[in-house]
Image (cartoon, rainbow, N blue to C red):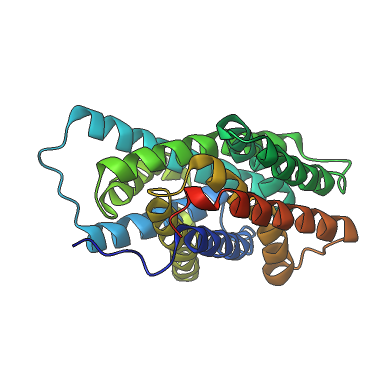
Length: 281
């Protein structure tokens, strides 16, 4: 008889939200000593190795469709990680994740089937807008990277759900992590000298916090959680990123940012409650 996860899908997603943003804070603290590409590569290498050892995926007998889905998932995973770290290097964590959230938010709007859900989605959108008011001068390249990460994040949500239905356990995530690592490795050609012992150690910690824990939790959660509800639950990411930026990197929070966080927290709770019958908590 298959066993249920000890945490319901809502709590698994929330665990992933906290873990990934704390990991991002540690990653940004290294950007003076190593490039974002190096940190992302270490993050993906750590998750790929650990997940392959734990999952030991069975690769034989897989259909062409299974491989196409998992390769697409890996490509979205790699692009999402690389582009958001490029954004982190140019603009504050909370603001980068706020802009990135445009992808999941649009996915939530597209997937909603209830008028009442639009209230909560609108409140989450208000929080996103409020976070953007604090900065009048932004690095346009950082903004573009955040938007690219948002598009990849939306693709990741959809492909993660499909991968979870086709590949048992963590098999699909393990294979996708290897795909993402393989796609990013050519970009590391000019950064090999940055792989010192300290950078590798902290990069491995970032890999556990920002990849292994959140992606494993989300993959399990998305087997029973609709992409629309998931998209609003992760509206907590901007608030979590802003808090991580304050706690780990020393980025100061304003009252507008606190108000924006309240908006996305309330929206997440409201959307979750309204869609409770669609969840397997």
